[in-house]
Image (tube, rainbow, N blue to C red; front, side, top):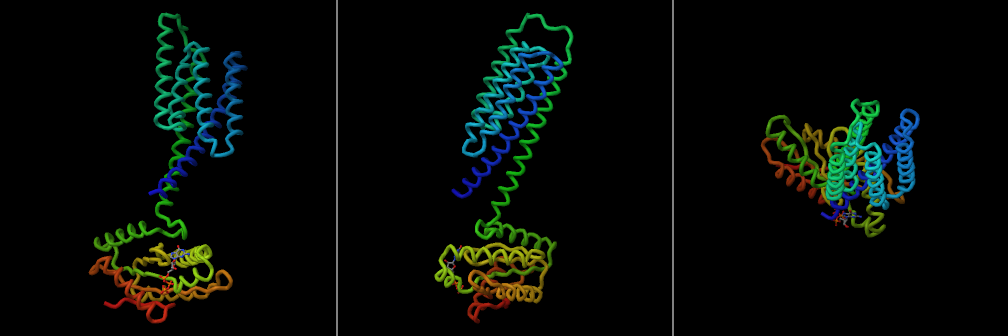
Length: 343
Ligand SMILES: Nc1nc2c(ncn2[C@@H]2O[C@H](COP(=O)(O)OP(=O)(O)OP(=O)(O)O)[C@@H](O)[C@H]2O)c(=O)[nH]1
């Protein structure tokens, strides 16, 4: 549980950092472009000066945010800078030309960067202020026609929202994909973990029962005398050797099989559509390849294989028990060998 919690927080920090950088970049580009428009098209120097302050703030925050430890503080500063600019702009523009639309960019930014509670609080405060501000305009004379400024305000807010949501969704999808991959991967060996192997076995069973799959083989593989390797080289070196062995297994089996860590120094190989004879030949090749590989200090490893076939007349549990028994026989018969399950 603790492991998955730390995985999640690691991911959310990365996701949050990507979003923060995206928001700051959007702020940088927008404030520069809008500032230039305000100077050269509208001669609105006061508003432009706030745009350039916002540009400088975004640039400084991007430079400041060089370490994920500064994530919280930078997120707060970015949100405050955005809110400050929006409030100043609406005030200077006196709410005219759809300038109040700019408050719409605040909720996505504060929710994404500061989370649900602070996002809700700051958005509610800003919305309340906006309603109050508009209420103050009641009975004040408004321009009869809309100008280019109105069109640009609507356009700019739409484009800003489009970018913010697009970055958010992109970053969320990447974080979800990474998290999903990690949740099915064994941390040490990078093979599938036990829980995902259980899912794959259930899927295999469903396909077998529905008739989509006619046959398969299940193989339990165990490294021989691994305890001696740990005793001789230590557990840390043992881990590295285990990682190398797992990498080799993955490379050998990439094409036609599914492989995962069954536990300790044991692996489970699923061979869909294999007959027992085909599985034996396949495992023989694998066994020879593993035994011929040199590891740390020219050490060689051997593995024992227990192979069982799986068909519609058997349960997956029976096939696993048979593969385990065959593995036991392989160990009993001298190790570094492939044994087939007998009925
Ligand atoms: N370094 C390391 N060792 C592990 C890991 N998981 C299991 N082991 C070790 O694997 C060894 C398994 O020992 P045994 O079950 O006695 O089997 P063995 O020495 O491989 O002998 P046989 O299986 O009978 O050939 C133990 O020393 C475990 O500590 C791991 O993640 N890292």
